[in-house]
Length: 231
Length: 265
Image (cartoon, rainbow over all chains, first blue to last red; front, side, top):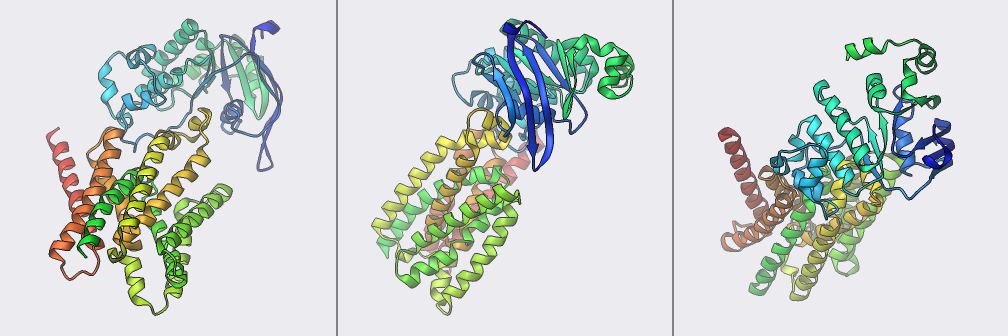
């Protein structure tokens, strides 16, 4: 994807087995510093497991080499907050030493009254932004976002990706992003890693417009504009 | 009796605070019934203490913690739910306890409903010190446990050893439940773990307020229950049921406050 010195992650022959089932098989890819890598693939393709492996939560074989000291901010797809009587202020303060106003500004939440809201009462978009703000607390240089617009309506999706783009540029963060949305891959990712237990495609996101690449990833040609319209 | 009552009143405050505070996490973990059933696991330990003539509460704690550790380990291996495992362990422990108590019905009754006649200044001071230590340690791990409830992966990614933190929490729950048994018995101590916390939840949108309200409600239930029992007696040999009544009144009061708040907003 880029010259050797500009990589932040080198993955080679990565394989994961869970209860004797192969969930990731001989993955080889590199990720360039300060870019957005979208990870796409059908359900059960191993996308979340790949994140968990990169976080060193899953036993694996092969090598994961971060080329510099990385600090990873992680936003999981599902979080259980509905039953917890915790305010946004308390959540963002977990870990301590946080400028709350600044943290909210980074994720474009300007109304500070949100700090006193119970976290379980936030809208899908607000909740994702608060979790991204929390992930940014430790000043990470890598962000892992597992479907960051889960539970977010269509109108709120785009602003979240625009915000992530800004964060990437201003804070020089490398973003790993799991998404099923081809439009998001084309618009906001620099590279695409298509997974189905093994890598089915790895290249620039612009290439997803080519029919032969779509066949390689999905087994058939997909009309990007049509998919965008259907969503 | 006056001294014993004074010690018990003093102890009930600390037991209430400790069970209320630790219980606030148990309720959030959706393990309220686990806390209740776990307390019954102490029964064989109490019986062995009485039979072998050593402090029954030491036996209760030993049984509670060993059972909790076994359940924790089996749960990690098999992924069977905590509730199901505690349910199985609880009925087994109850059966063993009843067998061990045999025809010693007075001792069985005291174990089930609490017996403050054995409370001394030494046992009170030890219990208070243990309760304070349990509260302090729980405060240290509170945020970690809450983060693990929100997302275990998120907590692990932040360097938290979730399994070890959960085990420490189970250990602390075992300690305070064993101490609480003195005041309200194995059948009713689960109440002190659950009800102050759900009452506090009715009035809280902030974690700090929730955990401390739960502790306060636990203390008020324990202290007022023992006090009312000593004044009115109601022909009850043990204070446990009075503690439960006071706690339930607090709970219904919070339900009404919560309901009124929803109507007016």
